[in-house]
Length: 637
Image (cartoon, helix red, strand yellow):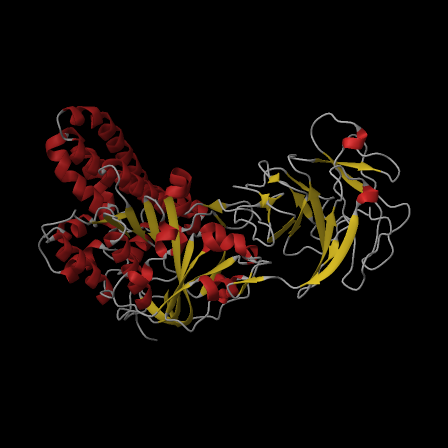
């Protein structure tokens, strides 16, 4: 970690905080060397309570690092972005972690148990008399005359000094463009109030390399200076411009790439360019899609040289028509061609979602049948009972199957649930046997088909009582479990790229009225993997989006329609992005310590509306496209 401050001028380190609040400026003035070393600023204490008249709104604070060493007395000036006052603190050589005590004028410092006396003073006014002396007692036993004192003064940028006796415990006024600083020096090794000299001076924030060094900025200005502006969405373009993403990814085992709307041309292009970077530059080996695990088996077979055309495989293997666009065909073809090369590891392409997303469990049951015929024939009657009910509402179109389930009678629903429960118990009982026979991989795949069918049945049953929003999170549980299964079953060191909607990849729960919290897949992955999970949201500010329209005689339910894109709201993360570049990536992890309005961004776009969420907690980075259009599959109204 870099030095917190250095003699003359210095920036507070990114991780330095006081009472949970980020410091924005730290300036050290020392005669000779003030060496702080790697500072975490652990010995921190706020001055006064929040809102206390003593310190003003926002508060000020002093800090001395645990390992701070000063060859001679030095001064630290610390400030917060919303601070109305600043406090100057001196520290003596060789002493650490001071504790704050209060004394009255005429008394020697060192009365640790005495409460702090407080007096109200307005900036620019004469300090009241008697005024309060605020002192710091340093650890250790020493006499009153040997106690090192930390003295603060109040001053205004219009006055040279307010407190006549140089012992008023107040801060320094701040204005947006200028700020005033108290410099406290001592003439003797052991100093007392009468030894203190007070000087005030006007100062503008210092600059370094043409940029301001003091104060935090808003997110919009941070993105302008530190965001990665990109001018190409070409899948085959060179990857050097994406190198800043390496800081976002780090050593994570799973990186999720989102989209605020399905079927947006530019979102496919952004995700596929990042996918290439993660595969070719960072060594990721699995591309996991928001596609059914069961039908997604076709994708994995095809990218390894299996039969069929890319159009056929994308239509069958990816639900909700999300594979039916030129951009998805392009990336699947690239994976297949890459795997045809003799050198390098294979790149897998798999699904993670429930059968048909939230349609019918029939595909999973059919996949399970082939396994049970030789592994456990006694389970086939239960399988057939479940499949018979599933056929009654099955439809290759997800929304059609979901709607038809509502017409299934209670008795048939119970038959399906009971049969799936029997199958699950039998399959679990077989696990150790099949492992001992060398069929662990086949058994694990079959069990995962069944698990998807079971979760889907629970989703259907829960919809009637809980509503679709709550019930649909069974998808997220299964998606997260599917990703974790990839990490557990693949070779050590496997790294996965997950492509799904922003809602699914966000790391924070979504509030759904009252105390209800909906947990997306990203929240489960973040809980399981911690820093090994990174989420990159993908969104836009202008152009078009897509929505699922009402069915018509010509268009079935589940058809994607073109729709206008609402302008960003004041509290949406989209409002912070410039639109001059084709697309821009902002590293939220890097930005957070340096921006003052991170908590202001409490919304992000979802299709044609904005969803409430703590954006900086939900995502590690945002890829923002200035202008978006729908894919060729989208119906123009």
